[in-house]
Amino acid sequence: MGSIVMEGLVIQGHPNGVFEVRLDDGSIIKAYVAGRIRINYVQIVVGDRVKIEMHTTDMTKGRIACRIPNRIGIPPWKKKEKKKSLEDEEYDDFFDDLFYDDDN
Image (cartoon, one colour):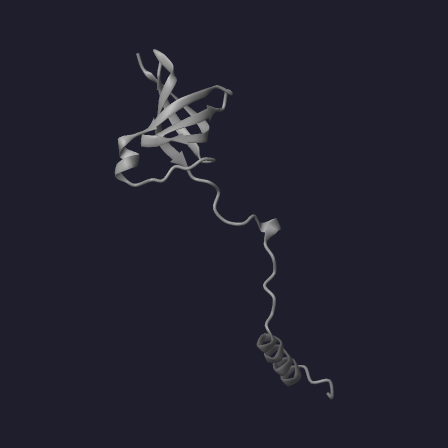
């Protein structure tokens, strides 16, 4: 008599902290939010990845043990270069003229 921990995706929310979760194996279960998550005011919304604890006797219900955080930040290949402002260009031109004089 133990519990099984699986990961899934929240697909629908119901009142009182009950959510429908699609597990990685494809099955859909109803899961409630654990008290530890309620106390810490962790917001769970549709589209979040969560860890579910299920009891071995009833595999149709579960408890959301934690929310798996999404990757933070922009991947390096999607980063855009910062556009230079007019002041930056004037500043660069000033130092180019000062240090790289073409007359010499």
